[in-house]
Length: 160
Image (cartoon, rainbow, N blue to C red; front, side):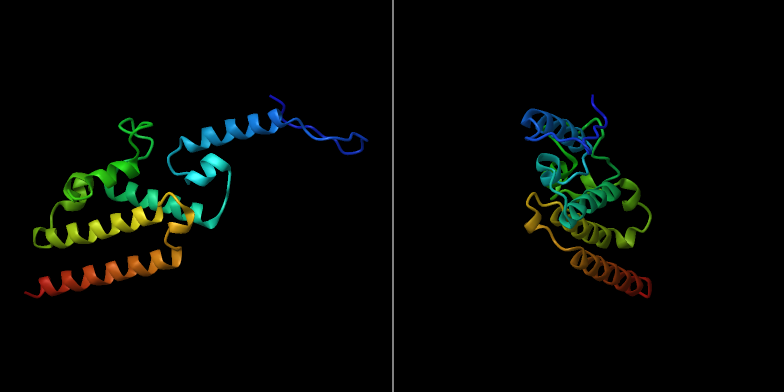
């Protein structure tokens, strides 16, 4: 349970025993990995990168549109928010927060289509391998295209 160790000003030589570094690192990463937002490479290896932030953003997108948190009781070691969305993706109405599907009946099909596209984008953000994840520049561009297309269709249907 050592919190701080100051070794400056001494003449020790040698290396720190491997068990002390690995034990601390394993405890730290296992704790963080349970939060549900942490990229696999950070949770398992402690690797920090911008691509880890993209992963977290993808999980956040899934959370916003499903109204589920990665830490909800329904998710365990076998089932995560991400795997749940992947498994149910063809049935978007089973995944999406029901509050998003209410009211505008004439836009229901558009809401399903664009929400499905957003969920796919979120899944692209949280690919397991960092190099397979979409860049945030592309995420923003995609979200803007989705927004513009949805607004265009909504305005078109409102004038009919």
